[in-house]
Every structure is written in C-alpha cells, then in structure tokens.
Image (cartoon, rainbow, N blue to C red; front, side):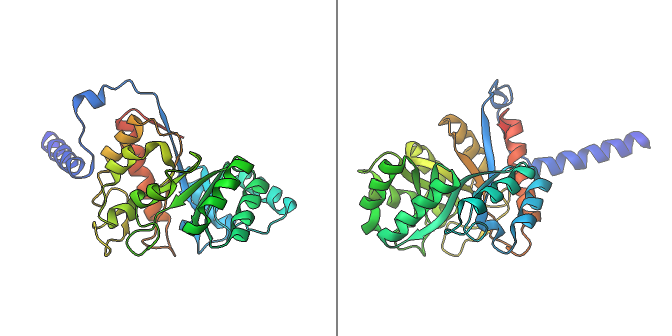
Length: 281
C-alpha cells in the first residue's frame, strides 16, 4: 500500500511539473554556463507603497536592485535627502541602479532629470522624452556621461509603442542613448519581444521583465510564468546576447497588493535560470 501511495504521489508531482516547468533539451541541462543575470524591481510596481514597505517586500523576495521612482525620491531632492535615501536602501541590502521612468516634454525637464541622476549617483536614466528634445538629450548624455533609456508603452503610446519605433528615433544619436525594453508592452503592440531583444541588443540598457495575457491592446500584465511570452526562450536569449543590464520585474496586475505576483514571478525566473545554470544576483 505504501508503495502504491508513493507511486501515485510521484505520478501526481511529475504531472504537475510537466504542466508548470519549462522544457529544455538535454544539451541545455548539461550547460557549463556560469553567467549571472541581475534581477531587480521597477519602482512603479510600488506606486501605492512608501519606501520602507517597498523595501520590506524586496527583502522578503530577496531581490536587491531597485529602479528609483520619484514618488520615493523626488526630483528636487537635495544631497542630504539623497544620502539618507541611499542609507535606507543599504540597510535593506538594496541598490538603486537607475532613476525613472521620468517624463520630459521640455529642455528644462531634460536638464532637471540629468542633474537629478547626477546627484543620486546613477549612470542610467529611464525616460520618456518628446521627440523634439532628443537632440538636447543627446547633448546631455555627452555632457554628463549618463546613459539614457527610452521606455516603450505599447499601443496606447503614440510616441514609443515598441522597440522598433524607439530605435528609429535614436539610431543616429550617441550610442549611450538606448531603450528600457518593456517586453510586455512590446508584445501587446504585436511585436516579438525575443526577436527584438536580439535585434536591438546593443541599445537595450534596461528591461522591464513581465508577461502579458495576449498580443493585443487588451492584453494585461500577469505573473511571469502564466502569459504568452516564452520566458525560458527569452532568458536563453539574454544569455546568448550576454545582456549585462538589470531585468526589473514590473507587476501591474494588482498594484495594491503586488507581493504575491512579484514573488511568484521571481520564483519562476529563478527556476528558469537554475535550469539553464545561470546565476541570479
């Protein structure tokens, strides 16, 4: 009887695993890969939470990179406020690696964003600039030696709906002008996020890591393992192109209670990376 129970139990577990775990070839499993991917959180995921509560969630998930939003650190913060902010992050073993997204319609707002990034001490701004200000952005990139990544927002975004649109705008500018690749919104605009990850690899400085329910404007964010984007293939492509930026989870399904969805997505990402012998920092 015990043998029968064990057999049935193992069969059920195997069945569940077959439904939930990504499938890889034997060659994948034997990989001697030792590369590392950085996993972070896009600050917008915590729009309804103060900084201490946000950091507490990050600690529970063991995620240590944060893209800083201005509702946690205002654009006009002085050096004392910024120093205190960094100290608070350090106590939670979290590093603020970039700022944004920041909307910029005027030259004054562009200058403010670069001065802000300089004071904060990061080398990457996630921005949504007006196309008319891109030359001015380019000048500031050269002046401050700070990279600038334009964020795509899907079919509702008339300026930058997808990665290809961004690239058409930036291709003639300094190579430190690139994109924050929102793979979910790219898919919602009918584009292939895996193809575009490889196509624009030299200009992708940051990734908003998410999955979506459909390749249409009606598609919504969902847990990483539950959507239509092939996450295992996406991760393999990150490895293939030797991506060295941060993959920041952005969870918009339930923004008043994001922890469960973020934690599930983190676990799925970790599992995929473990299977491919990729380390997660």
